[in-house]
Amino acid sequence: MRKMKTGKMKSENFNNFNKYLEKRIRDTVEKYKLIKPGEKVAVALSGGKDSVLTLHILNELRKDFNFDLLAISIHEGISGYRREGLKIAEKNADDMGVELVKKFFKDEFGFGIDDISNLYKSACIPCGVLRRYLLNKTAYEIGASKIATGHNLDDEVQSFLMSFARADFRKFGKFGPKSRKIHPKLVPRIKPLWNIPEREVGIWAVLNNIGAHFAECPYSHMSLRSKTKDFLNKMESERPGTKLGILKSFEKTFKPEETSPELYECQKCGETSSLEVCKVCEMLDDIKKVI
Ligand code: SF4
Image 1 (cartoon, rainbow, N blue to C red):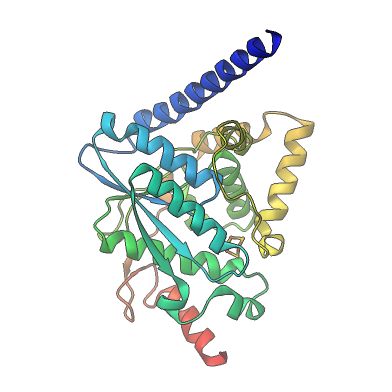
Image 2: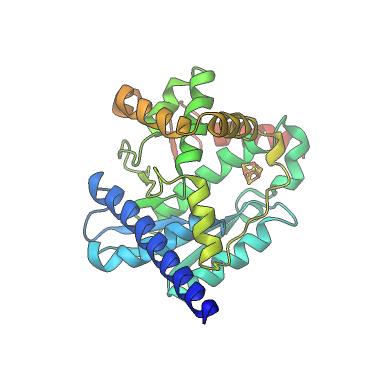
C-alpha cells in the first residue's frame, strides 16, 4: 500500500517537473518570438541530453506554433564518442517521426577530428569552426529557416565569460535566445533552452528515462570551456544564483544587434565570412599542407 502511494507521488512529481520545464521553454519561444508560423526548423541533434530535450519539446510545440521540424546530426570523426551519440539521435528522431539529415567531416573535408587533433592546442578549435560551418551549410541547403540548438543557461554563461575574457566583442552578437538574419546564407539560430540550467536538463533526461548520450568527449578536457565550466560550478555552489545573475546582467547590458559583424561571401567557397577568405578555407589550407 505504502509502495503504491510512493509510486503515485513519484509519477506526479515527474509530471509536474515535465510541465514546469515545458512551460518555461514554451514561454521562451513565445516571449522572444523564436519561431514564426510556416517556418522550417532544423534541430542540431548531437544525441546529448540538451539537443534531445530541444527535439522533444519542439516536437510537442510544432502543432501549436505551426512549423515544420527536422534534425541535422554532424559526425566529427571522434572515435568511441560520436558514433554512440549518433545512434541515440537516430533513435529519438525515428521515435518522433522527424527526418534526420546526417553529415560527416570525413565526407565533407576528407578527415575527421581524430586525424588532426595533434595539430592544435585544443581539438575544439577546428571542431567548433568546422561543425558550425557544416551545420549552417546543411541547414541552408535543405531550406531550413532556423537552426535550433540545445544551448542551455550554463553553456550561454560559459560562452559569454569566455568571449568577455578574450575581449572578443564580435562574438557578443551570438548571445541571447535568437540571432538575427544578417546574411541571406546565414541561417539564424534559436536557443529554446536558453534560460534552463544544465542540471534541470539532466534531471529531465534521468526522470523520463530518455536515452540521451551522457559521455564526455575525449577532447573536452583540453578546452577553455571546460575550465570556465569548473570555475562557474564552483562559484554557483558557493553563491547559488551566480549563473542566472550573469545571464540577466548580460541581457540588460549588451545589445547583440550592435555587435554583429558585417558579413560577405568568402571568395573561395562562397559561404558567409567577415573576411575576404573565411576561417574554414584558411584552416583547410593549413591542414592540407600537413596531412
Ligand atoms: Fe568537438 Fe571539443 Fe566538443 Fe569534443 S569537446 S565535440 S572536440 S568541440
